[in-house]
Length: 161
Image (cartoon, rainbow, N blue to C red):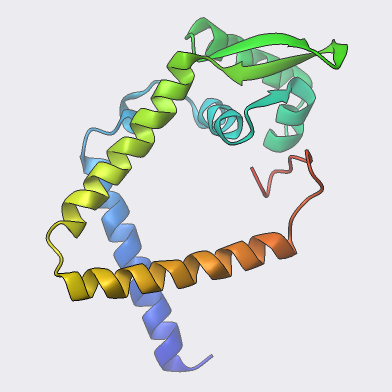
């Protein structure tokens, strides 16, 4: 890779880190919640997948089923997730977000979008066109890379969740 490409990638990465630090200074529900990283990951996995078995979550987090049980117990106590019997296999308990858990995810997402929107409101139309073009290209590459590494349907792995 050329020195210019390396320098551009480094500068873009540093700019993104700086933006993340600025966003973190605002009172996001992400930072004001009392969730541990593992609890947050469970909530995010459930948000993306709708529901998961304890075994799926254990595999996704790279921990044992007993650890997942404790994490889920605490999330149930906070009213963010619920457990229910799998309709296809009564031996399996599935975990899913409650309305409060879904609301937390929506608040976290909306807070980030709101901050990003404040910035974009100050950009001229030509810059927004360029940003739109670039972000679509980034998304296309990300989609391509994800499809090359796509797991089998229903397979939750630490790398994709």
